Structures are given as C-alpha cells and as structure tokens.
Amino acid sequence: MKFRSPPMPSAEMDMTPMMDLTFQLISFFMMVTNFDQTQIDERVRLPTDALAKPPEVRVEHQLVVNIGYKRAKDGTRLDPQPFVFLQGEELRIPEYRSRLQQEARIYQAKEVNLNDVTVVVRADSDVPTGNVQEFIKMSQDAKFEKFTLRAQQPID
Amino acid sequence: MKIKQQAPASLQQQTTPLIDVTFQLLTFFMFTLRIVGPEGDFNINMPPPGAGAAKSEILPDIKVQLLADVNGNLASLKLGERQLGIGPGAYQLLNAEILKLVGGANAARSTDIEIEIDADYNLHFDNVVKAIGACTGRLGPDGKTIIRYVEKIKFAPPKANPDA
Image (cartoon, rainbow over all chains, first blue to last red; front, side, top):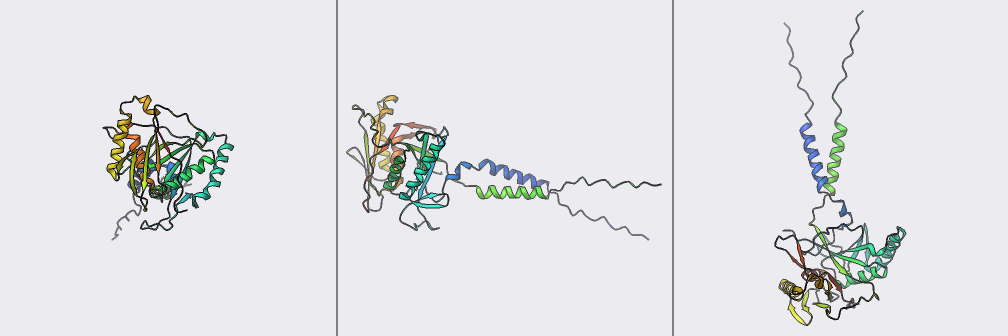
C-alpha cells in the first residue's frame, strides 16, 4: 500500500503587513524631519520665551551662530569660557572674528549684499550677555547689520 | 516526437533588496530625528557704529537696565529710574509698564519708540531674552498671535568685562 506524504508547509513568510508598517513609519519620519535644523547645535540650551515665534517669512540669507558651553553629561560646564560651535569645531569667541570676515567675503563673492544677511545668534541661556554683545560687535566690524536672538518656546 | 513544455518562470519578485533599503531609510530617519521645541527670533536693531540714526526729541529712548549679581543672576531690573525688582514678577511689571508707555499711542507712534537694553556684562543671557520678550509685547487671547508693543529694541554699548 502506498502512503502519501502530506505536503510540506511553505517556508515563505508573508512580508506585506511588515512592509506596509515600515513604509508608514518612513512616511512619518520624513514628515517630522526638519532639514533646516542642520545648523543647530544641541549643546546650546536656548533661553525660553512664549513670544519666541518662528518667523512667518523665510529669511533667504542667514548665518546661524551657536554660542554655548562644553558640558558633561550631567550638565556641568567643562570649561568656564563659552565657545562658538561650528560644525565639529569649537572656537573661542574672539577666534571667530576671522571666520566672520571669511563668511562676509563669501557672501560678497556670491554678490549678496551683507545688509540682506541676518546673523542668527543662538546663545546658551547661561552665556554672559557681554559675550553676546562682543560677538555682535565683531559681526558689525565684519559689516553684518541684521541680527536676531533666537529663543525657544516653552514646552507645555 | 514529444515536445517538452518549459516550466513557467516564477512570478514571485525578489523583495529582499527592497526591504533592506527600506530598513536603512527607516534607520536614517530615526537617528536624524531631533525632538526640539519650536524656535523663534527676536529682532534687534543694531545699526553699525557711526551710523547715527536721527533721534526723536518727542519720543526719547526707553532705557531698561538689568544689573547682575556675582553669579550672573538678575539683581535688579530698572525701567528708566524706576526699580521693578527681580524674579518673574519684575518682567510682568516691565511688560505692564511698557504697555502704559505705548498704550495711548497709535500704532504708528509705537513703531517709533525704541527700547535700549543696558545689561551688565556677567548677566546670564536668558534674563536679557526675558526682558526683550516683556518689552516686545504679549500673547493674544488665543495664545498664538502676538500683540506687539514695541518694534525697535537695541543694546546699549557693551560694558567692559569685569574679570578682564
């Protein structure tokens, strides 16, 4: 007598629901990702104010400068002096003078009027105001004229 | 002669590369996501040195003075010669006083008023932002629109570093 062996169950998994979910996750992350934040340095703890509303009109030319402290994981300062954080580099505020002049020359080479460039100061809430004013003075020496101070909206 | 029929080609597509790329994209977006509160700007009016703007005789600048203690915290907030105290109450008082100063004025006049922030060198920057916020205006009843009191805010000339 012949015995028939039962058919082998398929080893292939149905991937469709997993792919659906993955694409939904990708869509979500794409929506919430803001590529404007590339100039933001996370070490800077911005001051908070309820009136700090994002600008309604997008500024065409802006130079974002992050001024803050090097901190340990628990938030304590590793250096008492503030630094300008510049994409991997950490410069003392007076050392940034030559960079500012370089930035001004780059804008001028691109035929951008420096009056149209806004210098966005992202300064840590603990930075002495005198340092921020020194930075603004340095920028004025490099012929920048428009300045904005950045703050964060309080999170409820 | 018997002709053998070819077995039909498999219709199943190879999905492994697609899944690989999808997971790589998902990982990229997950790692680049930064959850931060929305940021906003306060414009400050800082004409270059020497470019003396014509000052109004009728509307002199309003001076807000912020004095710091040795730790950089706010020791005193003054509007002109008037002491407003310290702490959050001082900023609320400053906001109310600025409203009084511009309250009777029409919109065109309030745009002419300029506030000068005179802060000590060591004062923590968040105090200056709070003072600028208090001078700028307040949030409307809907909690979204800003009712502006003053458009022009500038810094007084920087003070010398006391530790230098």
